[in-house]
Image (cartoon, rainbow, N blue to C red; front, side, top):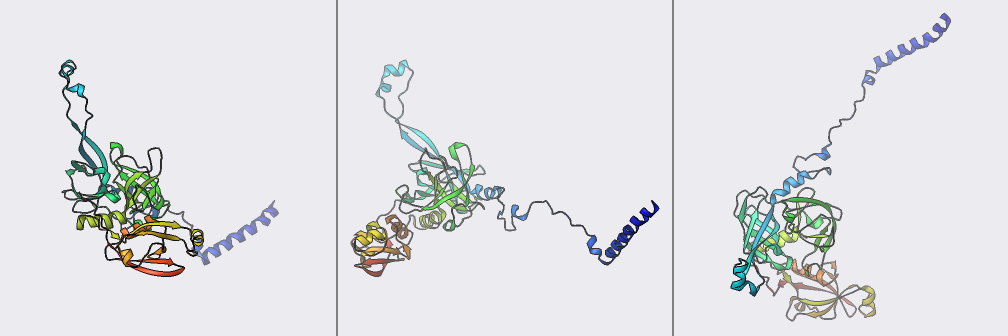
Length: 384
């Protein structure tokens, strides 16, 4: 036994001596790695400038945007259906009836977005159409009677103004660079339940030919939109305005809603109405075109080009002055492919009189470039 212990013991002692020497020579090896701090990372916290980086909650986005979204209550008189039997004295006496008035007041609901410290509010035209009185209620509970600054029926937008101190204008986002898949929040007052936030993503951008509107390329979203949301805000994950919620596809369809992009609603429509009392749009005078594929154009002898065949031009219009003729094939407008008449109208309408619009055309197999100077559209949209 003694021999066994001595045989086992000397390696153990030698090992301990070696370990002591190593720790004396390399004391840093004694430090033990500490576990990572389990506290939330910076990506889940507000940054120094207040922007929210996290995806766990959008509470900061709502905190920024919600005070700028208002409820709009409108009142108008609606004519009653006339029933002559109610004017009969016998029936009035027997049923204790009174002859009804010819009309009755009806109140409807919508939403709006505060855009300036002076109290300018943007909403949908259909929210206030025909209203005799418009009352705006802020998120903080204050309310005031609003006045109409101007309407733009074409884009279904109206600018209102309230005289209230300390209103909170919303921060404007970059709707031009909004992408499919971006998270968005819809804020408004649906179905009279009070201010409500719904969340979704951008399903598509630049949707055209909706509401018989050739001047708008809509943002499509699957965020829940219901009656009362019209005129409310569509904001990004940081609470910046991307659009004005305007309509759903139909009552039977869920998850297909549309918003007017902020770059059009704010930078064009509202700016023009506040400064000029109406929206001033560019106009080139191409009345009718026919879209052609490259194969169709080849069969018609117009060359291997896709574009728009000009069918009709307004006499004396900027297009005619630039030299455009019926039968020309427009392939590009301002270096963008010519898609359809709605696209052409949209590009012209978002210019101002005096801007130049360049058209690349094919005429008799020859490529030409024409430049037209946009003029104000002959039709004036009513502002009140």
